[in-house]
Image (cartoon, rainbow, N blue to C red; front, side, top):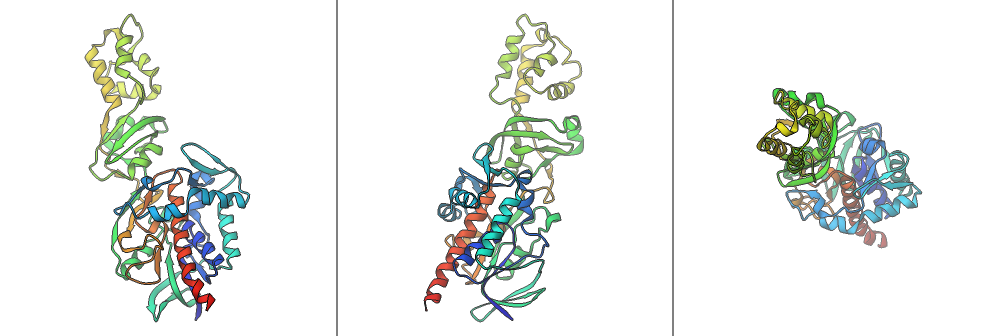
Length: 403
């Protein structure tokens, strides 16, 4: 039976980073993952360029049943800390907007950086390698793996959530947490497109592919972002953001022309205008949207603006700027960027990510109940929670080494 100071299960963003930091602090680390490739979520993120952090990331950008839990880790490993690491590895990057940072070239640059960090920490990596069982033994743990039994003083669970099963997502981390007596906050798809009943959505199917900036609110969330119409419902940054706040039955309200006084513009247009209503509305909104919206009242768009009653124009403007609709569901984990919910953080140390129930058992990254907004926040949580865990393990190891 091989022995290690720590076994990190999961070679995604959090697991790779934790292993590398811990290894460089003198921890003998084994990193295990069941998938043949490391960090598939990093590889596909940001359109292949990896939105690796957000310069403005802070506690207010995260959702959790225990909202203050993330404060400690985020304060002790900041976006600037990760930027410094990226720069040390000479990876070119740029800020897209709203603090979102991307690689200039490829997400592979971040994966390569994390692997080099692991190499510098002499991390042993077994991949692909499944874990069949984890049990307490003496002062630590024993693991049954595809490559034989392993003994370790500490186990770090960095297995991610349920999002995007085709790249290897499983419920392993949640099952392990329950095995050791931890509560779970109910999981659900987050940062995910929303869907609607087919009959209700029929008037908007033809708008699939249309994108425009909107102001969207639902639950406790409100965002000014781009919305994308799809064949089954709504997507785009605005909807992905609001989906993390959305619960079944929750009403959404969308302003399709934010910052515009539609009612006032149309009212002023009545004075002496010989344009059709459809033509006038298309000067304020994408033409496809204007036509589809007016088509729900046959003949309205063909009328001259001057001939439309002012109250009808006001009603039209209200409908467009306070569009109320209730999604029937989401596109599920197959298209969700992250999983909301997870291991209840009220049973973890915010300083070390260690279980308050089982000494030596840690949970980091997406597997815990901390979910960031769209835009690099979830990666920053991966780095911050991983660093907190690794440093805590290093601090515990240091006195042993001195002896």
